[in-house]
Length: 334
Image 1 (cartoon, rainbow, N blue to C red):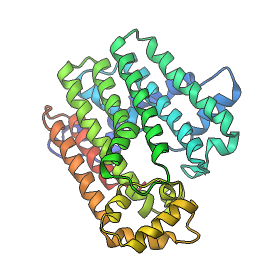
Image 2 (image 1 turned 180 degrees about the vertical axis):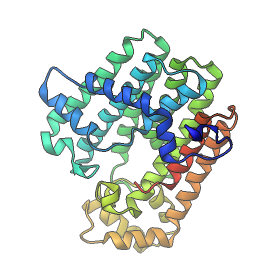
Image 3 (image 1 turned 30 degrees about the vertical axis):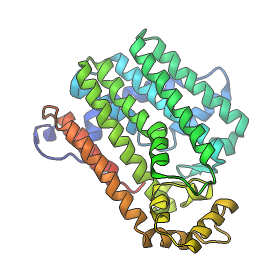
């Protein structure tokens, strides 16, 4: 491939994908095999999620980390399946907790199969991920995955505790997205490096890189919840606030909002709807107080930190791909 020799130049999304497409094809094949349960509904829900058009960002991150610092072997492919199964399980549980109706532009699994079946299917996916990981007989891998799962559950519990509350600080929010998003990104990169044969120092640096990338990803996600088009986003815009979640664009806006503006936000949180206070007026208030602009600046800070870490690695197509991922995260529209 000609672009492999383009040292010093950024890669496009297609070029990043092309670097690992053969590896990712093996992950997809493994994922299809490992998602077959003894109960038809669990298999159907897993297939429903896998066919929903996800970007596979987490296994791609894992594969790039393995390629940059070591090699892709069967264990790396299995770890790609593990992180995608864990991610799928969290999506199912999130949709049940949030009472979501759509996911990636289609009815969510809890709408199609009901809450009880969806929760149990999510549990099955979690346990299947650990079953695959256990086959590697690697305590470091299991330690990472157990700690990750505990962190992600803590994130859900923290979110439930703060649901519907207007007095959420930036520190509260950062604690939440560390657990809900950034820790999974970090583990993806560390797993890829570790199982691919990297030295411990490289694994640690890649974990730090991916943690910063994950924070930036969630910051942009929370901006898009207010600013994206519903068709592009794949779910209703303004959904976080409607569900009672106060995210960073709103936290920043509320810092300088008037008493009347705060009262309007409190009304949306109480009603769980935009019937009394329109979404357009909420978005205008956030824009007026530079909530979106400030969050984009904050996201850029974390991508800059991620880039600085990756720049400590030798130049290679995979190193440049991981650099380019930071731009894709910050510039995306869905």
